[in-house]
Length: 192
Image (cartoon, rainbow, N blue to C red; front, side, top):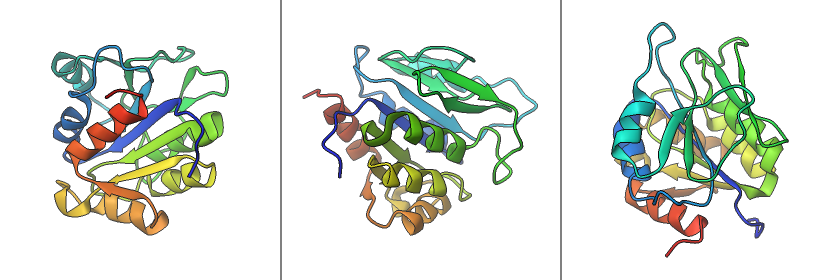
């Protein structure tokens, strides 16, 4: 496991995501010192209100990521519907309409792989509830780059397929409940 300071957090979730993200993000303060990026599988043909809902519930600022936008501490960037969200090595976001991955656009794997390339050992990847295998390969990429890997305990998840798939590719990932993940993220940001 890396001792490099953590520079960013990436989170992937699908079925049951709103409740899981709410439990993980609401304990974090408005001045959280790291950027957080989240992919949730959303219908491609409808406007999403996920970022607005989370913004109302959280002390952090929550918004949909925009192309060429520089990452900022204390902001949660949610991938917009029908776009892959990637992190560039210069610390900016990019959006892509490349083919879906595992029937998903946005794809957790795409975000995690690009963030692993950008942040290496300075990245934490978190897999939450979900009903497909998206994110498993991306989490393995984060581990290979020296980052830290967290998976929601499958038996606590609304849908256990995604956490179970992540643990198959990263069997040394730390498993935690949602409150434990929130505490880990506070500690990762150097908060008491």
